[in-house]
Length: 172
Image 1 (cartoon, rainbow, N blue to C red):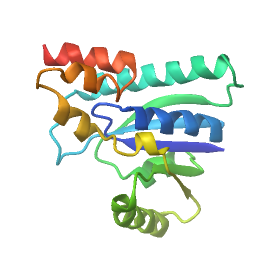
Image 2 (cartoon, rainbow, N blue to C red; image 1 turned 90 degrees about the vertical axis):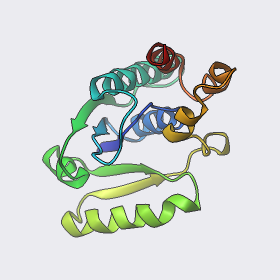
Image 3 (cartoon, rainbow, N blue to C red; image 1 turned 60 degrees about the vertical axis):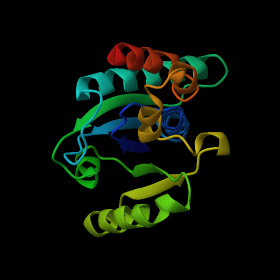
């Protein structure tokens, strides 16, 4: 089974990291797709986000090796000017992995599901709900915290250490 998990990952959060780990547990192969969203002005360039996602994958692989069987291989792909469902079909993906943080995500996730189903009904969508301590975290929330005195202590709690280093370097 092959899965794809997509997002803008600007920056990747602990919630994204959790989804990547779960995707690596569920699928033999996982593509983490970085979407270029023309309606958003990202803090990080696509190449920087790709590097941070690679670091999330490496960290997940290290954790698996220290207590779990590594069940999948993961890779990063950049999606620019394509629908996720089309990329999934081109890559022979069986499942699209999506996260739902709360009821506010549900209406848009149903819209995405319906669109994808109409285009390619044989590709399944798997919805995961992160644990309660991660549900409030979004990239927008992380970026909103940057700046005021003591921001480093707060942001450090929401991303993996290497991503935090990228954020500190970007803010300087």
